[in-house]
Image: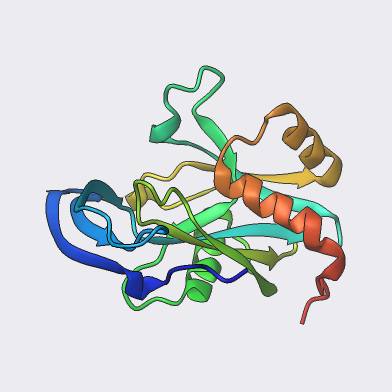
Length: 203
């Protein structure tokens, strides 16, 4: 379906850095064309500059296992069940990096596995009403027969548990809310919907 407007139909008038720490917050001033004609008034929004990220769903087609990680997350400290979330591996894209490179790097850093084959899944804006973060999702085919128990980088304060999750366990987790972060949910559901069309043979 063709969209009514494109990037030429918005005017970014000014940006101002409001906060610069581990992350960055900016104020955007912009206006855009409207569906019923003319231009919008000046709009101001505070935007969380998170940067681009990569997520990789690790899957072993031989054992039919998913390799997941578990770690404590500051954004979920108020979770009454547990702030330790079951996730897929992920990492930020640094300046000059290709998302594919990040996928291979994060697989080794966060799960200590080598990706035998990398398949692009989809990309999405995380929460475009308030952040610029964009995620590229991949499927990484791996051998899960000899996983380590723990991984992560000390200098990034990562304390990660590595888990092999069977298909039946994964379906149960999806059904009972055992996976509660958007990146993992999107990746797993995309895989289950598209599995029959994928070439899961190692190159």
